[in-house]
Image 1 (cartoon, helix red, strand yellow):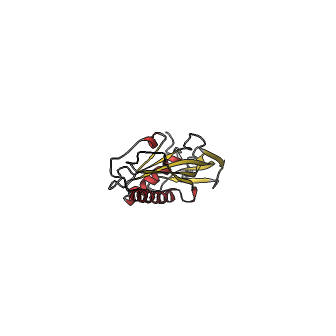
Image 2 (cartoon, rainbow, N blue to C red):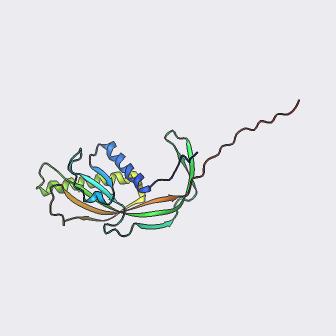
Image 3 (tube, one colour):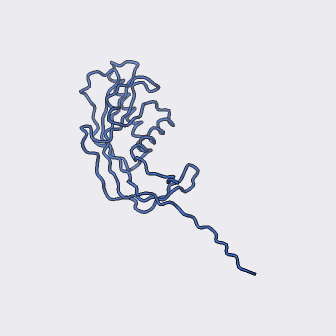
Length: 189
C-alpha cells in the first residue's frame, strides 16, 4: 500500500494558496506559475488582462535561491481534511527560493489613460501582497520592485516586476504513524 502522504512542491502549494485567497476575495486576476506564462498576453476571462505570474527563478534564468539549514526542526504532523493524522515529517533543509513576480494590471475602460493604468497595476499589486502575506506570512520577502518600460504595446496593461524570496521546507520521507493496539492473552482456567 503506497504512502498516503508524499511531499509536493512548496512553490505550487504556495501559488495555490494565493489563488485560493484571490477566489475567496472575489479578485479576478489570473494567477499562474511558470517561465512561458510571462510572455503570453491574456485578455479574456473574468479578470481581463489582469494577471500575476510567479516565475521560479531570476528573469535571466539564473539563481533559484539558496538552500539553508532547516528551520523549525523536528517532526511535523500532517493531517487530512478531516483532521486525521496522515504522517509525520521533518524538514531537512529550507529553500530560500528566489521568485520573479510579473504583475500586469489594466483598466480596460481607457487603455491610453496612464493614470488609470497605474491605478490598476497598484491595486493588483496590493492584492498580490495580501495573497502572499496570507499564503506565506513572514516566509516571504519582497525585493526590487520595478516597472517594465521596455514593453511598447500597453493595450494589455503595465507590467510591474518584483523579486520575491519564498522560504519553505524540503521534507524527509514521511514517518508513517503507528498506533498501539490492545493485546489479549487468554489464560487457561
